[in-house]
Image 1 (cartoon, rainbow, N blue to C red):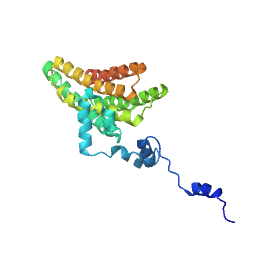
Image 2 (cartoon, helix red, strand yellow):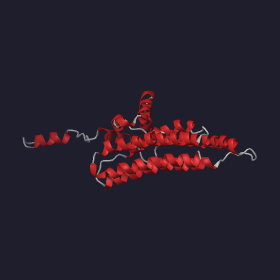
Image 3 (cartoon, rainbow, N blue to C red):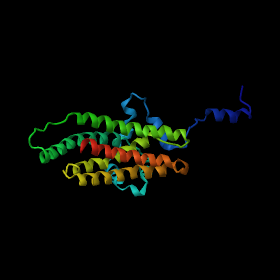
Image 4 (tube, rainbow, N blue to C red):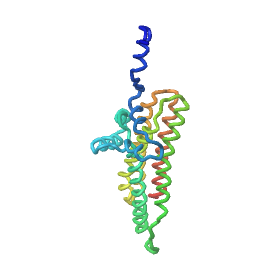
Amino acid sequence: MSPTKKQIPLLKQLMTPHLIIPADGDAQQSTNNWKGVFSISSYTQYFNIDTDILLSRLISSLYPISGDFFSKIDANPDLYGLVWISTTLVFVIASLGNCATYLMHRRSDHGTSWTFDVSYINVAACSIYGYSLIVPLAYYFLLRYLGSNASLIRFWCLWGYSLFIFILSSFLLVIPVEFLRWTIILLSGGLSASFVALNLRSYIQESEITVVVISAFVLQMGLAIFIKMWFFA
């Protein structure tokens, strides 16, 4: 029995493959590459960046005025900053913090011996990893609750690169001059906080949640002061 004329268009429609193209092409790529939470291959796409892109993003974190970091990572957000910059910062502040206390000890107290404080590594790991993971996660849930189209991967990328300046400033914090140390850490914290706040403001683009941007700035400054007070006191 041959199909009628009315059935032919329906058959063609059923036999034609349907392509589901989401509005966000980046989301489609992430979905296609996602193999599960416990699969390493699911995360390799977020470390697939070359040296030129990496250097460009590191330099962008040192110039926060433009506030266009999200536009630079939109096509390919990465977790390099979250993992490697955080790890580098942990070992840098732990080792240089001990070096700074040694220099201050030599200047002030010659009667007692100096010992390496291993607890610096534990405190550095808990504080830096905890901050770079939990704070972006908290802002993600908060902005989603407020109705903003937030992206957790992009937030982790932003906060990860915001820590890069603390690696550079840590080498200067070894100088045993307290006034100079405070000047360095406040400038570094101000640049890092501005980088987070200005990019966050350009991303959410909603005036009624300005308090969210201000709180991000304050938290970043708080991290800078914590690094100074605990590791370079």
